[in-house]
Length: 319
Image 1 (cartoon, rainbow, N blue to C red):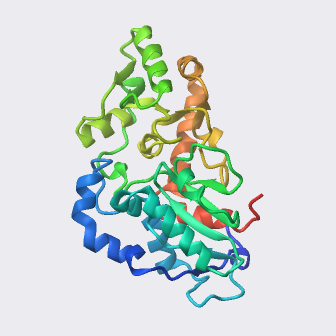
Image 2 (tube, rainbow, N blue to C red; image 1 turned 60 degrees about the horizontal axis):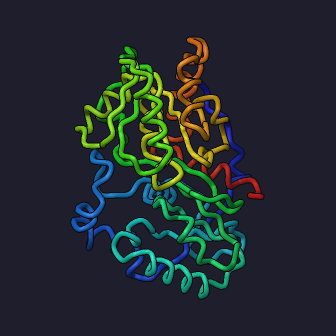
C-alpha cells in the first residue's frame, strides 16, 4: 500500500517555545519518575511517559525539519512543549492553570499556540486561557470547542506489543472496565440482559494486561463507553489489536481528519443503539471495518504516526 505523498512546502513551521525549568520535560521526567509511576500506573502495561504529549515532543525534535527555537517570524505555530499530564498529577490543576496563564501572559507572539494534552481534564485546563488564539490537541475532551482537536489516547509501549492479533474471534463483543459514567451502567444492563456467551463483560479492570489484550484481540467488537473523559485508552487498544472499537458517549471524540472514523469504528450516543447495531452487523461490513481499522492504526495513529497525522491536519486552517 503506497503512502500518500505530502507537499512538504505546505507543512506548518513550529517555533518550540522555551519553558521554565520546573515545566521542562526532562526535569519532570528525571526528578519525579518514581513518584509519578506510583500515582499514575495506568494502563498497567505502560511505563515512564505519558503517550501523546511526549511522543509528539520527541518526534518533532528528532524528525521534523520545519521547526525553530528562535522566535522565527515566519513560523505558523508556537508549540508549548510541556507535559501537562505530569504537571497536573504532580502539582494539581490549580498549579497547572496558574502556570499556563502566566506563560501565555508573558508570551508576546500573536501566532496560535499549540498544546498537546492527554489528561481528561484538558478542557478545564484550557478554560483558563482568555486569549482564544490557541489549538488544544486533546485526547479526551468533554466539551465542544472549535479550538480543540481530537487526537488518539495512546500509551507507550503500545498494547499490540504484548500479544499478536488473533484472527480467531471467540467473542462478538466485550467490555472490561469500571462504572465511571452512567452510560457504562446502561451498557452493562444491555449486555447482561442478552444472556449470551458471545458478549463478555467484566466490571473491573484488574485483569493481567496480557489477558486483557487477548480478550480484545479475540473480540470482533470492543465497546468503548466514555468514562471520566470523552474517550478512553480502550478505543485505541481495540484498534491496535484488530477489534472494532465502538465509542459510546455524548460526544464523538474520534479524530475526523485524514481518514473517516466511520470507516474503521462506530459511534453512538446510546448504549442500546450501540448494542443493537453490533448484534445485527453483517459479515461484509465487519470485514470492511476490520480491514480499514488495521490500515488506520498503522498509517495514521500508531505511536509517532499520530504526530505526522496531526501536523498534516494543522497544515489547513482550523475553523
